[in-house]
Image 1 (spheres, protein in one colour):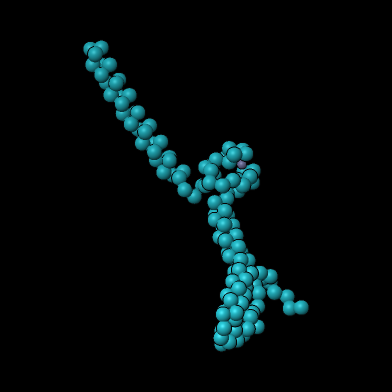
Image 2 (image 1 turned 90 degrees about the vertical axis):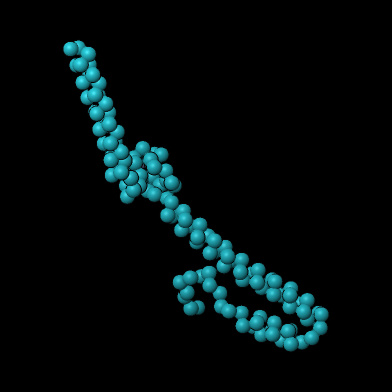
Length: 126
Ligand SMILES: [Zn+2]
C-alpha cells in the first residue's frame, strides 16, 4: 500500500505491451483483430480518464481565472464588473485610473463650453 498523492496516475501496462508485441510477432488475421480490439479498449480505458482529468483541470483553471470573489461580501462571480450580490465594483487591477481620466477630460470639456457660453452672454448684454 504505497500512498500516491495523485490517485489518477496508473502504472504503465507493461504486461499489455508485452502481449501486444507477442501478438504483433504472431502472424494471422485473428491476432491482428484481437490486437486492434485490445489496443482500442486499452487506449480508451487508459486515455479516457487522462483526457477527462486534463479537460477538467483546464476547465477548472479557466473558471478559476474568471471567477473573482467580491472583496466586500465574498460572493464569487464570473466575468462581471459588479458584484451581483452587493453591487461592489470588482477587478480593481484594471480600470479605475483610466476611467477617472475619462471623467476629468469630459468635465474639463464641459467647463470650457460653459465658459464660452458665459462670454457670449456677456457680449450680447453689452
Ligand atoms: Zn459583493
